[in-house]
Length: 88
Image (cartoon, rainbow, N blue to C red):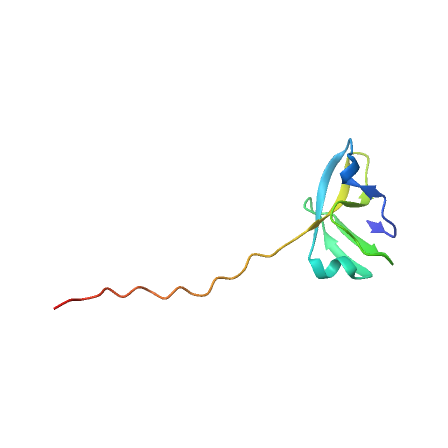
């Protein structure tokens, strides 16, 4: 699918099923982005304005595709194994 304008926002409600399009916060200001929605549909976004969470970028008969800010989980440092203390 191709998006060259914002079709609306989910904040005002919609009667269709909303499918999330995960983007990193840095990608919200990018002018050209390719991403994959949660249902596997590839979406190419070419906009000259910044995106916000909830913006609808594509629409089908059953679904609307809306931006969702994706925050990756932090990688925890390898935990140091605990050493058993031995008392004399």
